Length: 255
Image (cartoon, rainbow, N blue to C red):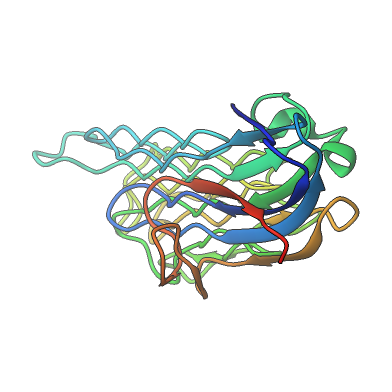
């Protein structure tokens, strides 16, 4: 967690970007923005998600900090080449008025304490099929297995679990287009589910976690999924956020 102390009374613009899923181009992170009036010396607490981890051989990549699910392990068997594990899901980025650590710790308090969340993207699978599970937005992006099984992303009220993406399936049997580890789900208000199927054509990216705007505590808020265009933290615009998450707090000076 990072702590921000307001230097002056005023309105502040809050922006957060979710992290990308890991390995070979996992799902992009989402974006959320809102405004809040803050008195001098009051504090906000920022938790920035990290990009999902890359696999190490057949071992799936670690989930990104703040809710990314771990990538599943590939079934290595007696192959002479490496069956690659899945990428970890990207972590969410959030700003809160209290310090409870990572997002899943706010399950019973989020309506009073969380200001906004940007969802993380789902992890990559070596034999996956598009689309990528981008971070939310109100809804995280879905994923489709090689066998065309649809795994829905997280919403405002459902997903794998509050604040935590699901680990991708670790494979235990051989399967054409199915021995590689599945990608982990992205972090978010609700974390993205990850496919738990195995066997032929079961490889699948992870889905995206959902973003969130607390409309009671934030004004003029919006949350945008990672398959759409929004401001980039470096200036200009981007279509989905790549790499680690990001947060910017800007004092809005009155005319």
